[in-house]
Length: 433
Image 1 (cartoon, rainbow, N blue to C red):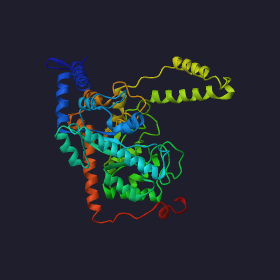
Image 2 (image 1 turned 90 degrees about the horizontal axis):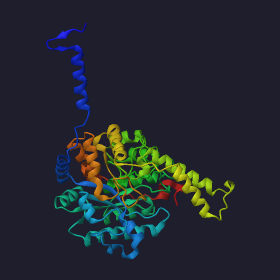
Image 3 (image 1 turned 120 degrees about the vertical axis):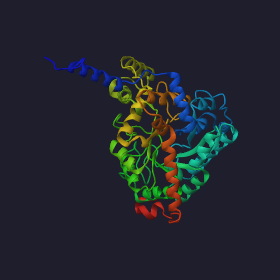
Image 4 (image 1 turned 120 degrees about the horizontal axis):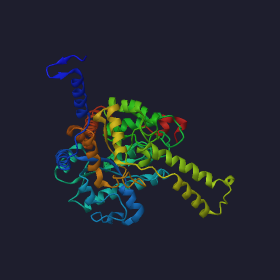
C-alpha cells in the first residue's frame, strides 16, 4: 500500500514532479513577435559582428578593375552580400577579408593585398550612409550607434606580407586589424590545416610574427592553420586570439575545425571562435558525402575503371547517376547552432562568435544563404534557451571584448618593446630564404 499525504499519494507527487521537470526542460512555444522584440533590443545595444566576408575578392573576380563601382544597393548577380541585406541582417560590424590566393607569392602578394584594402575603403567611401571604416573597438561601437556598418579589414594569410615584419606593420597602418597566419598552404614559418605538415607548428620566425602582431594590436587569426600551429600560437600570444571562420572539430572532424583541447586553450587565452557557415564544416553527413563523392569522381577518372578519358560526358553521366543514388544530405541552421552550443559547452559562452565566410563559400547552409539571415540563427539559439545576455555575447559582444583587450595589450607592449627587426633568415637560419 502506498503511504499517503493529505490529498496526495507518493505516486502522485512523483508524477507531478516528473511533469514539472518536463515543463522546465521543454522550451516554451516560440512567440515570433516577442522573440523579434528581444532580438531587436539585443542588436540595438550590441553590434552583430561577422568575422569573415569575402565580398572584396568576389567583386574583383567578377568585375575586375570595375569592382569598386559595383552597385551594392541593388545587389550584383548571385552575391551573398549587399547593403539592403546587411541592413535586414542587422549587421553592425563586418570584417571584410582582403584575401588573395595562396599561390600568389612575393612582392605581387603585397601589391594585391594593398589593392584589396583600397577596394574595401573605396566601397566605404562610395556608401557613406551605410558603411564606415573602423580601426578600433571604440570605432565599432560609435559607428553602430550611428546606424552604419563598421567596416574592418582582415588579411587572410601570412603569404600576404611576404615574410616581412615591416610589411606586416604597414598593413596595420593601412587598416588591417587581423591576419590569418596561413591560408590553404604551408608558409616558410607556419603550417596550414590543409597542407602536409612542414614545421609541425610555428618556426621561430612564426612565433616572432605572433609577438609583433600582439605589439601592433593586430588580432592573431587561427582559422586555416593546423592544430599544432593553433597550439603554438596560443602558447606565444600575449593577447586574445580569434578564429575568424572556423567550427568545432568534435562535431565535424574537418581539419578546418577546432579540436576540443584547443577550445580549452582558447578559453584560457580569452579568445573567440567564430563559427563558419560552410555546409562541409557544419554537417558530418555532408562532410562524409563530399569525401565519398570525391572518391567516386577519382575512381571514374582512373584509367583502370574502363571509361575512356576522352569521353568526359560518359564520366559526368556516371557521376550524376551516383549522386542520384546518394542524395546530398541537407545542412540547416540547426547544424550551425550545434557548433555554437558545443563551443559554449567546452570553452564557455565568452568564447564563441559568428564568422560566416559569405561570398567565399561555393554554397551555404539552408536558411543561411546571405547576410540578411543572421537573425534567424540567433532566433534558433533563443529557441534553445539562450539568454539575452548570452545572445549578445555570441552576436558581437565577445569580439568587441577581444578587440579591446588586444588594444590594451598593444598599448602596454609599445611602451616596453621596439618594433621587431627579425627576419625569416635571421631566426630560422637555413630554413629561411
